[in-house]
Image 1 (cartoon, rainbow, N blue to C red):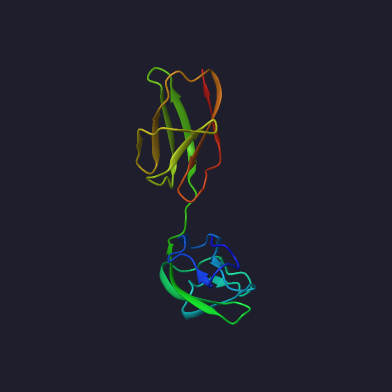
Image 2: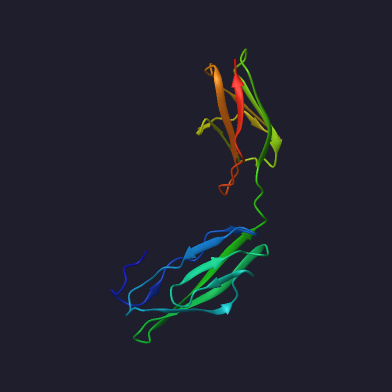
Length: 175
């Protein structure tokens, strides 16, 4: 973020982090220089439906309701009446989907962990007892991981899709 109150008024960034329909979004647009406090506004284009810009803080927040790439211009004015503007974009993708595990089983002979379920993103990660482990294959409904020598007793598996959506834990036993 830029240093406030030093030099001419300026805005940083050209593209805001992406979001997803139905998922809460929050991003602070950065400004610096000039004479605070600042007043913020969208001067051209439009934010994605469901998002708004806080005029006093420059925070873009809300819950997007439509996918697409949205281009707009943010204008900031300081207490000394200086203004600056920046063209920005936000990419809003489809709704994020929660992964669900229906079963987890461990085959001791080959050290193979098989986690079955639905909504597993191709880039999902597998958490075994809270630690990320490598995945050998992921077809969207079955994840296979090589885990030789798991200790006897209960273990917990979770699947985490991009965007931080994590399945409920499933406990499985190793004999």
